[in-house]
Length: 129
Image (cartoon, rainbow, N blue to C red; front, side):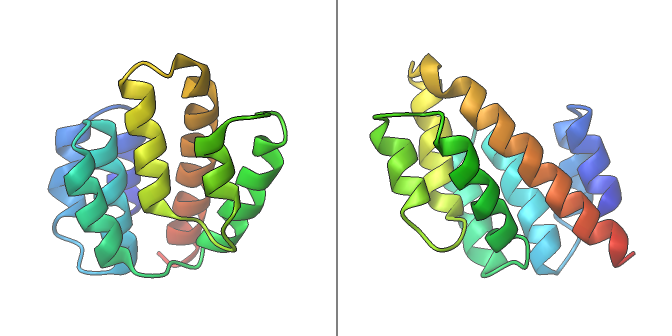
């Protein structure tokens, strides 16, 4: 999992994919979901988020998203994300897709959520390696 995450961090999506698709755990599926979101292949990313199920980093990630969202006033897509008790990967994929369709004002928010998501998932995987 850590190797898949490191390849992803350095923008080697194919290498990351080679590793993540061979990992039969929720964390492996999570790396796979992030990689497809970055391609972007949003429907495939959602498929892999479904395979993740509930992941232990969802709650701490959601707490950080709520803190970040305080800076994003009057943005309905962000408000939809913070209305949940736990991180919603599907809503985040939709938010990233909106950036891809031209909602540039959300790009910095999405990048920061992605950075924090990567860090939490990597730390989780490293602690279990």
